[in-house]
Length: 299
Ligand SMILES: [Zn+2]
Image (cartoon, rainbow, N blue to C red; front, side, top):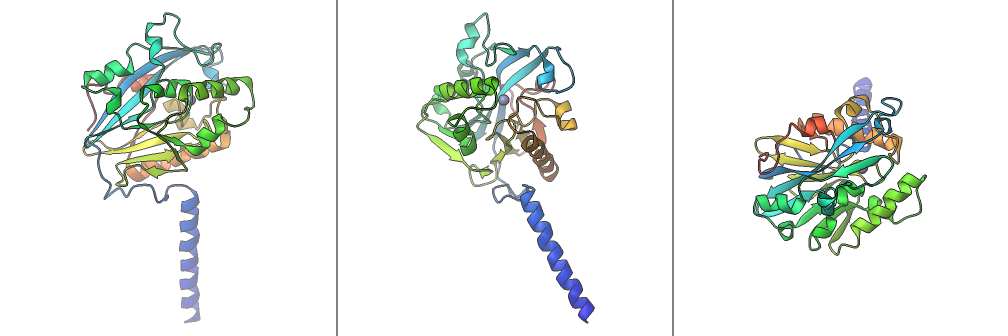
């Protein structure tokens, strides 16, 4: 009798320990959707938001590929939910489209080019920037926030940690300081700013969820969207740059926190498993080139 009671106590204790540890392992945040009852968005469009050439791949793959150049894609995504539009990242500044020299965030390392403006791509499906009610920002590197200024009336969704970081004291080196100064300039002071702490179910129905994935920068985030036919799709932000980096948990040297970067990759892996999700990696040009491009869409 006593033994049975002890076994019951032990079982309850084990359950408590498990639920607490799952909680701290991120994937049971209350904001994350219930896969069986989550709402849907109707369409997900990929926009070509630039491409870049970096002269030293080893910055993204420490210890390997030193001095090898690498091409990255820059990707924005447009989500249609009912008659609302949400844009995920805003890409390389539109002025770059006419610039024969391209544009750079770190001139010694990387040069961006832009083949089509964001505005012209929106127009292809009959939209103006003012039709976009929400602009969610994965993080404040210039190739992600280059066109926030096109959306002065939109609700801007970014992590509080990111906002405070770019407005805080200087970073550990000149590269980081340059990126922070550029971020302040490009972001400006949008009037519809909403600062977020951690994960967020944006529409309270599980259809669009911001996932906090710090490490690349202090307030980096990813986006989970739910589509009727495609299921759950996770848009990486810069939680990872290349499929191979994800497989190897490899952290770029420019990231602000190596340990947090690895934890965020683990969190994404858990989400992929929980939701049977597909991840689209923003800068992985090889993967990106094979994805649908506006006016085609995922539904
Ligand atoms: Zn970045």
